[in-house]
Length: 488
Ligand code: ADP
Ligand code: GLC
View 1 (cartoon, helix red, strand yellow):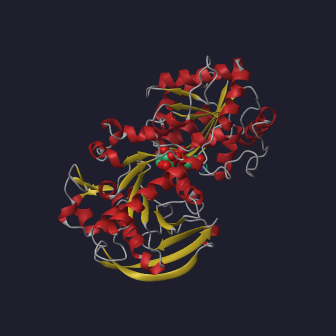
View 2 (tube, helix red, strand yellow):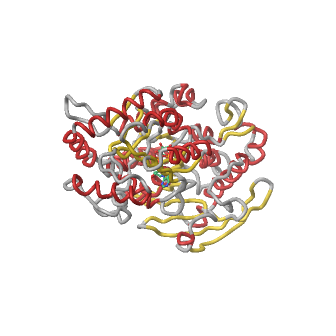
View 3 (tube, protein in one colour):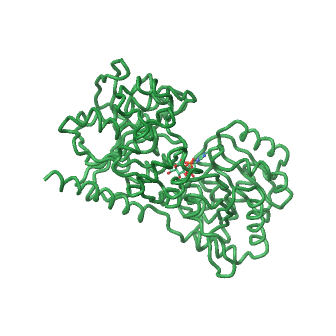
């Protein structure tokens, strides 16, 4: 049995702001239980839903030296669908209304605390991982601390680390002086070969330098981050470590995302009966959101964090023109105020055609994936993207920009070969996006049989975790077995 520990800042079903939580919640369940004991550490946020908090049980607590103070570290635990989750409790750090605040320095302190605490609780819970799988900048200090202060003890010696990049843009970056004071790390770590990044310190960089292996969530993104445009200042490091850098595409939970059984969608359907049943979900959503009752309007769904990454400036630029067509647009999302207001404005201007739902709702997200004809995701960059996978599963054809995981998971329609599961465009250009949408409209309206065949192919595409979980297992084996050889 191999012990694997996931450490992350969010995970379904306990707390979620984006795709990271989906991955942390669904991947551990798909790792072979006969050979791996996978456990997960998350923060115990005060903003977790009460019914989630009710699932947690107190396990233990102790005090830990951190940032000149002696900080309380509470440990809670829960078992969910066969996976053991541990939660680190500290009122000061995890008290906010949201998991993350806008105070960058506080976030760094919070997740430095979390990373150190995650390592410190291991002897207390009696779980000695063979490998720690770290996710994103919030856990970047784990490989660093393991190298530095924990390396001297027998318990920690030889633990392998994997750092998975879900988004290179967020790095936990701040000036060296403050980061050094918070982390207590020596000068040795604050040089350009280690955590320093153009005179600042980057917590993610620390993880990427000290982890045994780096992975990211699609092959294309693994290539892209070696270039300056996508590299966020770390492209040099990515090139230097390219032999330890792997792309493993994300999957989604095929039990949760199942149009035949999902309880949020009013009319369940399958690949066999979507022609009749799927449109009923569209009618129901149109009624629910006050859109015109119109089967023929191509309903375009968007479920997203409203940030630059997702290409909303292209959409803003083309909205007026797009709304001249017989389309409807439904948006569910929260994020930057300018995008929230942009969609509110268009919902007012084109009432009956555009609906802006500016909040977070699991239930409505499923309804949109099920009811829409097409799903729009013109991202500037996209490490993997899960929304397009959810759309495919629900037979809703993605319209995407060819970047990162979008390129790897959506096969563009080829009318001559009769292949493809969606529509795509290459350059980050609003007119190219509009052409792709209009091409989709044309197939939707004038070649319905072709459209429906594409829906069949989309629903038949397999983006469950089955294949990718195996790749992670192989990587874990490679790393852990290598330890055994050197230690004998
Ligand atoms: P990212 O992680 O960059 O936000 P992904 O496509 O990987 O993008 O994952 C986004 C996840 O968050 C999907 O599960 C999507 O359905 C969900 N999501 C985003 N915004 C909302 C929202 N407002 N309400 C419900 N779910 C949302
Ligand atoms: C990040 C990325 C997204 C990816 C998700 C899960 O939030 O933006 O592309 O799907 O992580 O890996």
